Length: 128
Image 1: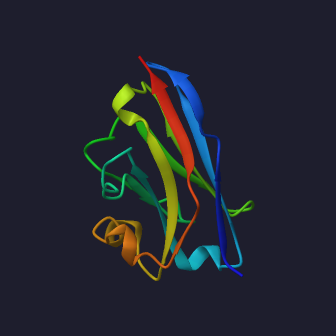
Image 2: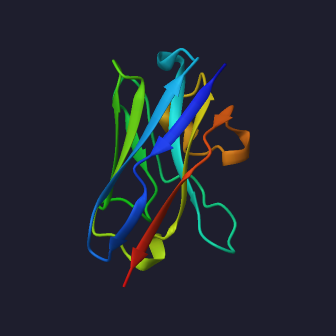
């Protein structure tokens, strides 16, 4: 059974930082690109924020470039999202998702609902 489990969300003040984790199991980590998405209250899910893979190739959406960083720990089959300089508008449920046989660059162009597997999400709330 494939599982993606996010953790690390919480309440943080504006300007603070959080690191989210996405622990994967049941899939061959090397065969997937992992992307991070978010969905703010009352809004549709945004396009992918960043993508990465076991080779360390990483791509970012312009909206988060310079503030967010994706990385992976191959031994743990876990992907991280380091979020810095958080703003109230970053408040959302953050999801990770896995898509098979694409590079992170290719995965940037794939809508979230076309990814193969997705986690349940973790809430991030940024207070002003």
